[in-house]
Every structure is written in structure tokens, then in C-alpha cells.
Length: 296
Ligand SMILES: [Zn+2]
Image 1 (cartoon, rainbow, N blue to C red):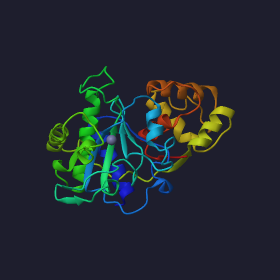
Image 2: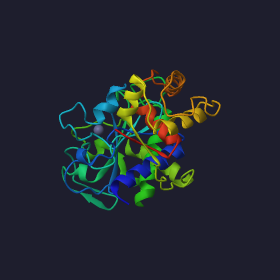
Image 3: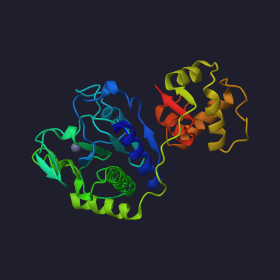
């Protein structure tokens, strides 16, 4: 398997086992965003916190607003509700200067962490060592669960022991404080989940039948019109919202009912629902129907 397929499958495996949604960020597999040089993602797994919370976190991690644009700043992000976002499925920048270290039998040279680690960013202000639903200075129980499953899925995929999982601060102790928990905390969480195994075996995702362009979908919902790729969206939406079959119309045309159903779907995901599709909701719908592949 390629690195991209490996990381996607780790995300799918973890989301299924944790019972959360896996979202694919725009350009999650775009090779033009990749950091240069070799990549051995089977060496180590790093846990970070974002030091900030809110919707802007994902775009920042995608590398859209920081100095290394367009190279993303992490592979995975775990939102407050435990949702896993695959930000970028290849080499990018997150480890920075640090090391060298020998980690569970693999040597990682000084300052070369980006070539050897897979990372996850936990959405948290990172100022208090507390696990709580309601305090964004710490992390939520859902985040502990999703990070545990992600690192466990990574260990399974590459046949690595829990001692290959550590914090960003373990790699860069003089520069970094994330996370506020010791590596032993994360390793214990991973160990529990490895003992149970994946809830359902991660099968290779079936080849999609429909390609849905996010920008075209947004344009059609804004201006009206029709396109064949809207048909599987309508049928999936009817199923997910428990509507009668063909309630949104038999054809591939945008109509008022379709717009209203879409807004309702976005609200059900906790997004500010309006008729203009957002990438998070489009990806969530595609997760419901593997025949749909979303492109930008
Ligand atoms: Zn970090």
C-alpha cells in the first residue's frame, strides 16, 4: 500500500472503532502539498495539542494560513467531539527540530522528525491538564478515545509496539510542552484498544462510482441547475434523514426541498446549516455512501 492509502486506512479503522466520523479535508491527498524528501511513517507516532480551539484550527493545520503554505501542519486532527479529520495523508511539517532518538528499535536522526513521524493534533487550548467535556483548556473523553484508537490503528498497520507512541515534547523537550500528559498515559490508552482489536476489520474502501466536485456542488446549490452527480447525493440524503424515497425529486435538479434537506443535514452535524454545502458535510455524506468520491 502507498503511504496515502495506509494513512487513509488508519483513519478509517480508528473512526470505525471509536464510533466517530472520519472527515477528509480538502486536498488531503494532493501530492502538490507534500513536504519534500523520503518518508518512513512506520517509525513513530506523535501526539500534539493545537493550543487553540475553533473552526479556524482545521484550516490552519491544512497550511492555508501559515508560513509554510501549502504544506500542511499535521496528518490527523481530533476535534472536541472526537471527530477525526484526515488533514493530510503524507509527509508534512509537525515535528520540527528535536531528537535524535532511538524509538522502539528505530533511529530518528536529529531534526529529521518530519521524515519519520505520523502526528495527531488534539483541538485544545493546552493550558490545563484536565479531561473534561466542558473545559477547552484540557481535552475531552471523546478525544482521548479517538487518539487512543488512532495510535492503536497506526501500531496495527505497521506492526509497532506502544512504546513507539509519544508526545511532541518527548521529541523536542526544550521547545515544546505538548501534550500535558506523559507518554505513559497515551501508551496505556493505546494498549487497552489494541487488546480489544478493531471493531470491524478495515476493508479497502470500494471504488467510488460517482465523483462529486465540491465547488460545482456549491455553485449548483447557490445558482440552481442540475448535474448527474447530484442524484447519489439526493438518494443518500433521503436515507440518512429518513425521508421517503424520491422525496427530493427523481431528477438531478436542485430544488427547494433538496436545499432545505441539505441545510437540515448540516445542522444535524452541528454545522451552521445553510444551503451552500460545506466540505465537512459533503465529506460526511460521502462517508455514508462509499460510491461517492468528493473532489475539490
Ligand atoms: Zn506539537
